[in-house]
Image (cartoon, rainbow, N blue to C red; front, side, top):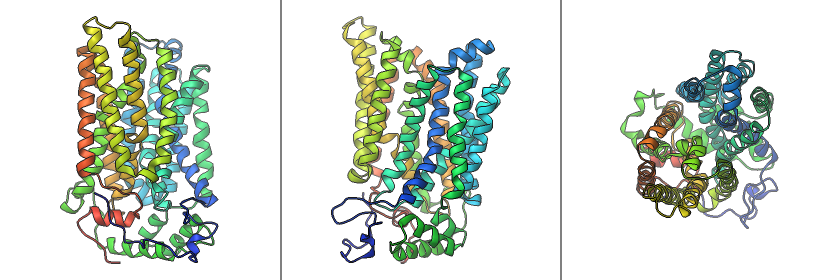
Length: 476
């Protein structure tokens, strides 16, 4: 289900696209402009903030509960209110990013995060904790949409997958480093440390260009061309790409800006089905339940929680990195299929472990089987399903509906995340093996969904992807 590219198959050796600042040469190696790398790094500092916010509640739990005399129920509110805030941020994310621009939206989100971290750090009562956590949630809800969209819009087609997947890698790094820092430092200090990446991004945003496609959307073609030239390198001929962006944007201006209700039109249904379907399957495959409650899973399986947690981090970061490296080589669909098969297998192995435990058989082997199952699941998830739905979400919606569609898809992701996080412990108390069987079946369905509906977007411009997925097309 690939998308046919209208680009020429080869580029003459004399083409200015093969200059020292080019993106890809005839040997397939890359020489990426420094400004593009730095701009992407500034953007994905927001992803690091996302990861640190998600990872904060686990290592800080005992310290916060002891210092503020919180019960389990009160701390559960603190942990879960992040997702509520993220849903609020997700609802507003598309409109804010469309009206103010991608850079301003990232800066706006960091103001929420900084205020939230400060409120948490200086909390004396539970209510300030909740307010701070809610503010951080609003910030990361906005970041979870705008970062992958911005990165997708500034990168060339042959690097877009890997660069957009850096969003997931930085989330992973943020979570892992916050786990590590939180194990040794007081929770208030960890919260103050959380403001550092926020400030780095906030202070760096004025020095990076805005999205050329967003600038074209608001009619500022001169600045759009200037931003594109800056991102590709001063010696690169950007005429073809700039013309394509201009013509496609002008054609889309004939389409009205759609609200969320307006998304449910026939021309957007395929893109919406792919975007929403991937987000639902990503979350209902069980990732947040498994990651948030990994310690209790390992304890239930008869393992040391420290060994399990260290093993998870040791698998998660390398596999996420591998996914980034393979994104633009293997393509989105193959990585998604392999990832979905791996998560299905991992959940099945964990289910067998708990089933054997219930039968009181293979008592020595079942904990190892549970550990292997969880590690296979986490590693496979990190390879593809963790990042690729966000990559594809940033690619498939035309710019006239990207704000509404992005808000809706991001909201669905966070809503499903809350459902899984909230319901996981109830499912585990019902049946540990049954819980993982359910997750395994959903992961198996993900394989079918990807094989039947998800297009291959590798090597295509955003305009080509969007024209192919939506029922109307533009004449170039």
